[in-house]
Each structure stands twice: as C-alpha cells, then as structure tokens.
Length: 136
Figure 1 (cartoon, helix red, strand yellow):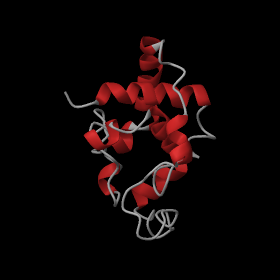
Figure 2 (figure 1 turned 45 degrees about the vertical axis):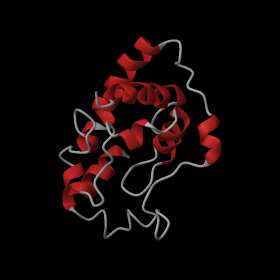
Figure 3 (figure 1 turned 180 degrees about the vertical axis):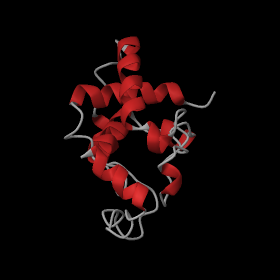
C-alpha cells in the first residue's frame, strides 16, 4: 500500500485521483473528534523505549513527506498541496496525544491512514516520538 502513495506523489496525479476529496469541503484545519482527546498514551511512563521505536517508524514511514526534522519539507511533501504539517509547530504540538494518534490512524487526503499499516502500539510510539520534534 505504501508504494501506491509514493507512485501517486511521484507521478503528480494524487490530486487528479481525488486524494484531497476526503477532506470536508471548506475545512481548513484538520481537527480530531473531541473524544480523541480522551485517549491516553500508554507510553507515558516508558518514554525512552517508545521514542526509539517511534523514531525508527518515523524514518521509515513519515520522513519522505514530513522531512527528517518533521517540518513538512520532505522530498515527496514538497510536491503536495497542501504541504504536510510542520510537526514541530506550536499548533501541532499543542494537540493532545490522543488527537495525534487519531490523525495518524485515520489519515486525510494525501496523509495515509496508518491504522491498517501500523499496530496500535507502533502508532503510539510515533506519537511519543513526535513530542521530541517540538521547537525549542
């Protein structure tokens, strides 16, 4: 499945295939449902383990669009409109772990849904790693 998204991006046909039609018309900000904020990260007390695993997953699955430092400047991300989120931004970092977990799980537009590609544990590990990307 992952290769399919790459192919769409590299051929520049993601938009023409309706990749962005999944976003509600007129929605400018991607908001997770309120119940997602109640989800608790099971790695709250095992941060180091999760960061290491999450970084590996991020490098394998996310860097191409979000870039090495998570700024939305990966090589494939540069071709997308809208561009991938800057994961270091205050706007992203202010979201709850549950909201980030939901977005990673469900996807939207060019952002694939990882719920069928990564285990629940792996998605939480990515969320934990994303916290290390915050601008300092």
